[in-house]
Image 1 (cartoon, rainbow, N blue to C red):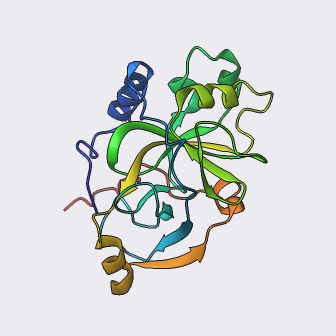
Image 2 (image 1 turned 135 degrees about the horizontal axis):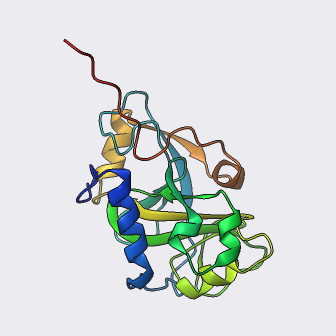
Length: 202
């Protein structure tokens, strides 16, 4: 698995990174891409890589030359309102930004439900779409219930060609069918960064 730079930073450092995103360039829209196929990967117990321990990852196979995904069960401690301070209605919400993975920790991605295929998004699976388009995200956040069927991520998870297949064969992951309830209604018990165990005195 690819590792990002500075993932050992504390929460305050992570917050600074989030705020810098307000002036950062957003990734190019993938509106012309082919429809995606997606699966859920669940990490085996005690996976050595701390970035993925206890994680559930939505993996999409047709985004690039190799699989990429988003960890869906690791909320950060940063409220959404900190990422978008100019959107005053968000200050009343308690929703958090999620840690999508250690790759390009500084990019913003989001998953959302939609009845019809929207512009500037590609289908992850039935009824759920994937995008990194800033204009579309702001439109979703302007709704009466902005976080209804919407989850926002910082960074993503990526594998080199053939790497994920090898990890699955090794038993690092179990596969499940991608379902929207697992993304939007699932209980997230593994925050990012993971809490540090207290050191024992000698």
